[in-house]
Length: 173
Image 1 (cartoon, rainbow, N blue to C red):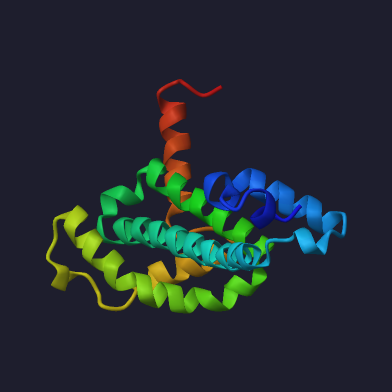
Image 2 (cartoon, rainbow, N blue to C red):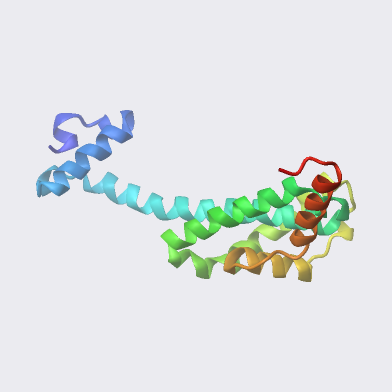
């Protein structure tokens, strides 16, 4: 069924029902029933949303890696590393589903870092000038590890500290 003939506003009113109708029309070979203009727009939006997700996840990852780098006391905080690991997992999953995003990583990091730098200065309550204009080497290495795999620099120490703390406090299971 062509949406513009039966219900020209369905695309604007209920995207989910519109999408189901478009899928049915394509699946059944009812090409005259396909809302081509809106379908093209939605397909283009899929690529944009994947890129936006990559930007968002890399921004959060960079924020946490920079905070760990600039505030050594955070290096011992498992919740910071937990966020890093979660962003790593989600970025890897996104790249597995859309490998064509991988070449965009360097550009995204380059675009996001100036903003991350300002936000880190604000959250860490330090002068912007004290934060390197370029990614610190350990942050670069941990970013590469997040994208490629391996053990984060500093994480093993945190995990070992927590094991020791757990054992010394008698709460090991």
